[in-house]
Image (cartoon, rainbow, N blue to C red; front, side):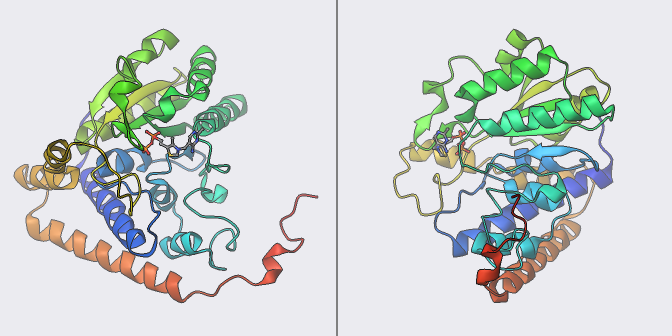
Length: 315
Ligand SMILES: Cc1ncc(C[n+]2csc(CCOP(=O)(O)OP(=O)(O)O)c2C)c(N)n1
């Protein structure tokens, strides 16, 4: 697929947003599970969705999913801090429970695996409603070994549901390398479900966005689900203050050298899509935007006892 220069620059911008959001939240939350090194998979997963589409994001990158759907960055940051101005008035963390009004399904209990089924449910609803909406289920390689993954994929493929399964394979689950849990590739499993499966270089932004576009187009045509495995690498620990990352230093350094933002930047400049001054301007503009949103969230008020009242309670 050939993407327009405009799409490529939107993709670059969303990757920079992903990085800057990560850096900003890392400063205030030592338990933040960041996506440094995984920006190409994250941005490609959430860019270009339409109204009516649904995403069940992986927790690593979930704020970007909500932002890409139109949520306000300051209010998302407020959700990290439990502020009154967050989309849920400080009741739960915005990275775990994405604002549903933007079509973002959360992780809710924190159990990994069930969101694949939630996305599949959203795809079933779209099919029953006769719309061409799609659902994106994004999950880690560790989550891919859960039974929920099998159930969701089998159900979706059997009923030809419009869902794109995207494995954000950073090759580790806390401290367990994926080679100790996944014997083949995640993508190869698609064959058993009767759907297309492709492993993509997850540090190649263009390859990622092409694969996602193709899978979404197929889903919108009513041809059913696809599985994409974006092979990438977690450049830092499991969470910001993780002091027990057991991975070999040379492996970590080799992947850091393949930073997806830098690779994409070089390609955009090399192909004449944008000169470095233009890309620098995008970087600076995003940095300012993220800093302003964080400053706003930090001065926002804490919630009062009123949020514990009867508002929004089902019964
Ligand atoms: C059902 C379930 N089992 C275990 C955990 C604990 N846990 C939290 S994060 C994590 C690692 C998940 O690895 P992966 O899906 O590869 O995502 P990554 O952190 O690598 O992005 C685990 C095991 C959980 N949240 N839910």
